[in-house]
Length: 171
Image (cartoon, rainbow, N blue to C red; front, side, top):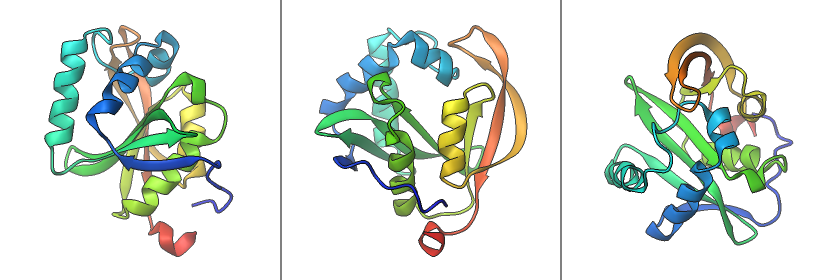
């Protein structure tokens, strides 16, 4: 992992609380963010489906969820979950927080907490910003796949990434 990932002042992670969910819902309503994330809910405006999804996530003992807080504002979320029997990370940052190193710093901090390795991530192949965040945190591309992206209404290419090693040993 890169050692130049200094957390922006005012950044911290904490457990997700029910009061965070309206912020997460508002973040997912952004059409540009949905396009970039690609693999999103079928209908991002379906509040009931959103709440049911988060109820399942928060009840899953195998998932680690954190709220990204920046300067006292809910900036997004980061999580570890299991997909196809292996640990994966995912994150979402509200667009107002893009381009300031917040996603990189939040993911780096999260990877200090969630130390199991290897750990995987996926990203739409054309999402250069998210790919850069993952690479700055030490992830390397190990493969490609295709999948149906709800936000784009089409099958697209995605990159599969892996992080090896314990970040506490490389930081």
